[in-house]
Length: 164
Image 1 (cartoon, rainbow, N blue to C red):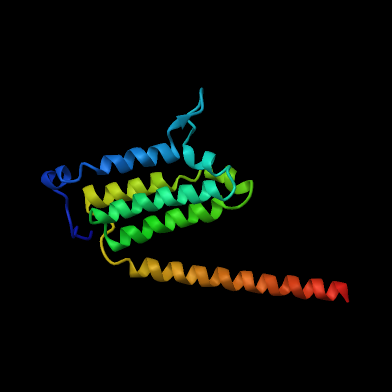
Image 2: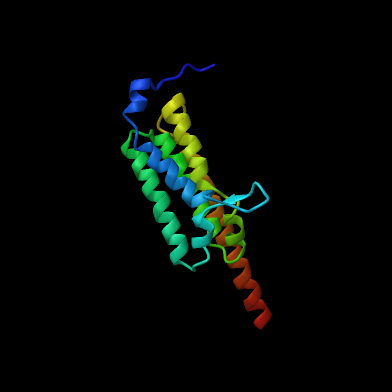
């Protein structure tokens, strides 16, 4: 078992009272409303996503502000990378017409980020530079870009062949 590199004392927790605002805002974006008779919860994020372009941009901006605010209170680079990955994945998936809107009701990036934040500040987890995570993210992005370029090339080749 690895020793914790950082533990939060009670006095440090008292110095972070504004983190409750982040928790509240994340709740509003991801799980404020409940469908009667079920345990299913959703927030403003999927509702805003119904507005083409503007809704997704607004949700991304709010999530970005939450990450910036956490960084302001000393979140590690690794934590910022993890949270940014959650938000970018949510934004990419949410931008897919119709399907993205449906997935937005279940994909709760801000709630996941709150769990990461609490583990960081109160349990001393997710410390460090995050170089490994950043490297993995870059590899995945380049692989997807390569697949998209290959698919586009094949589609253009197919269409040109079909025309001639």
